[in-house]
Length: 447
Picture 1: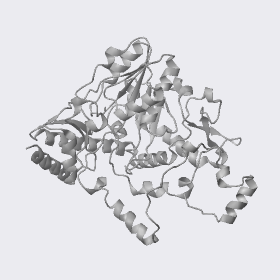
Picture 2: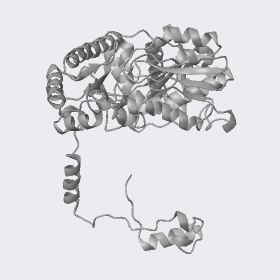
Picture 3: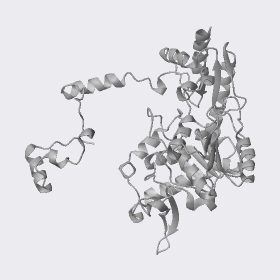
Picture 4: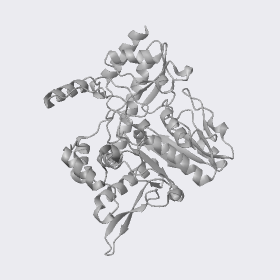
């Protein structure tokens, strides 16, 4: 946003129109306790070229994912994004497009969202997908609320393999509801979620591959949940895995939520990201967000409209399925362009490359003294147990230019049992030289 200063004369003129004698009078309704009572510690003014040099120096301190061996995952993954994606999303008709309230002038945006929904529904194996949500974590919370509306039950069980950030967002949405059950971390296996199901359970939430990289048995979970009249919510943080694993919809999932960042969206030092949601046709009216549909106009020509938009902007607040007031449209466009470039065969090949590199990484780590790989199954991410506290080890490796993954204690600081655990990811961009550098550094540090 540009800074547009006004002269004293201009400010006085605006105050006169408003009818306020001064700026202070204009804001007199703001309580004194809410006003700033301290001086901002900001440097004095500088020439533009010096400010630019200073900002470049600050930016130069960043260690980007492409600057060396990179094994960070845990919900945000480094993948190759074709140059075509960035080129197309920066076209003015896409970059500046807003909510398609007027379908007659928003056909391009609506068609893109329709095709995006089709892609998401296909890879998840579900009947229908919405036009995206903010990110995977808020999508998970929305799925939980949706399950409560559908089943008219309140008990929600979160798997011990669910990403801690996703768990915390659900807890924030439900305000630590007594009917929310958060199972203990399960870094070495499936956990005992099935034994927790009863007739009052609205849904269980299972991530696969889970936070620790394990693949979960969705069929058994779906059967157990459906026997009690509840729903299975499946969460996926690494959407590339759907190019290789059987679709959740084929395994009995009722609602699928995913983080779409891996396709078309770079890491960007933390966002923005993209929430995917898909469900069964019979649940469509309780799905939050927007749904774009295909229709014909008065002349029989194909057109696109917002078929479903049950948000508080459009209907009475108490009737809304969600208070999410937008979709991640530009990120959805990037996802859709990248997916179209890959095609079905390319998406599958990308997934196979990820898994092949992860196998190389797991095999190499298994040979390092002081390291134990905890996963029997994985896609492109795994957890290792090391012979010393993980946080300090990861920090020392970072000082050597190797971003060696995420210490689990960083996301679960109150869990003593995870102190020596590191989550590592390998993608199609991971090279054999990267793996060799990590193995050599780990061997030295753990000697």
